[in-house]
Amino acid sequence: MLIMASLSRVLLESLVPLLAQDAPAPAPPQLPAPPWVVVDSPEASPWDFVSGLQLVVLSDGTYVGSYQHVGHYSSNRGTYVVRSGDRGATWKRLKCIENLHSVSLIAHNDVVWLLGLEGTSASSPSPVAVMCTRDAGETWEDGVSRLRREDGLQDNQDTVIHAGRVWRSFSRQQIVACAAMRTQVFVASAALGANLQDPASWRWSGELPSDCFEMRPSSRTFLVDFGGDLTLAVFSGTDQTLRALADIRGEGWWLRKRGELPPWTLPSVHAWSLIRDPVDGGFHLLTAEPTRDAVPPETNAPQTTVVLRSSKVLQEWTGVSLLQDAREQPVEFKSTLGLVEDDDLLALLSYEEPMPRNKSGQPLTRTTVAFLRVPKFRERTADSPPLCCPPFPR
Image (cartoon, rainbow, N blue to C red; front, side, top):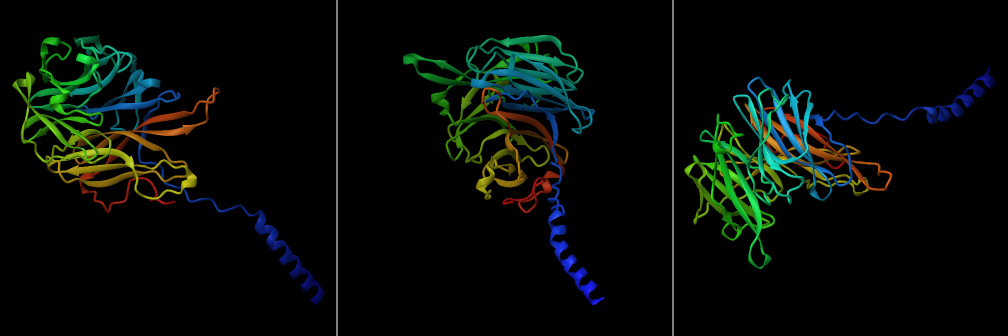
């Protein structure tokens, strides 16, 4: 019996290591699904990206959005119109408009106007054009209506509704004496409820030259509704301070440069839209920017995070991190657009994911447009955890 017990113990001790080797490794912890909803993804192609995100909300809760698919050498590959009938839970691509770019979406009484520039790129002749839909993008009336034919119009999409009118800023490059390049800025406006496809509905301001407006390559132009007055503001420099301010008078007939400037500043990050909060009158910027947290270099992880920055008077800004993707194969956030709906912040985001190279050996990147809802966004603080994902470093 003793011999049998000893043999059994020896056999068991020899089998334990073998059983341990055959046992499956513990599964890695499952990360929560990203909080965003995929809206659309254009065809992957070398050097392509997405810009010009737009979003409007109709009275029945339908969301209509658009984005521009930009190709190699900034060529326009089309503006896509998308829609959600369930408040952002699912989305459908409705239309690709091939010859329109730098689009603004304007909604009034459930009529959606699509205002943009015609052409294959920003450097081509760019007439201002408008399209109209009364059924949330299902059909479009009267095709494309041209409002004004201009050369060299730039893709400045800042559009606001103020004092019963819709306003949009434009910039235009022209070559003056000695082949110098100069940028002109101007503003267009039309009354809400008017037929925006009728050129007679629009007012066009005079143009101010760049030497008056101190515009630089890093300049950003915004229409700012502050204190009941609408102004055209130019921010530039590494500190993004206010360089010039023009008062808009006479329903947009003319611009007047203001001599004394308020101490406005913007965060030194790339921002696509300045959001005016309809509740507290403050300002918000939704940005995609480099993260300051450490990422292990061997992961080659994109180091971007989506941040909501807020300010009461365009001077001191606070930041709240919303998204920072620290998964093993993270996405890289690129462009953003924010819109306030009651207590929630609605956001369209674009992000990029690397793909295998094509047959020619060129790198491919899949660009995706996504929708994100941030509930009760005003209650979030710097101590609030991001909606996604695990904190850096992994």
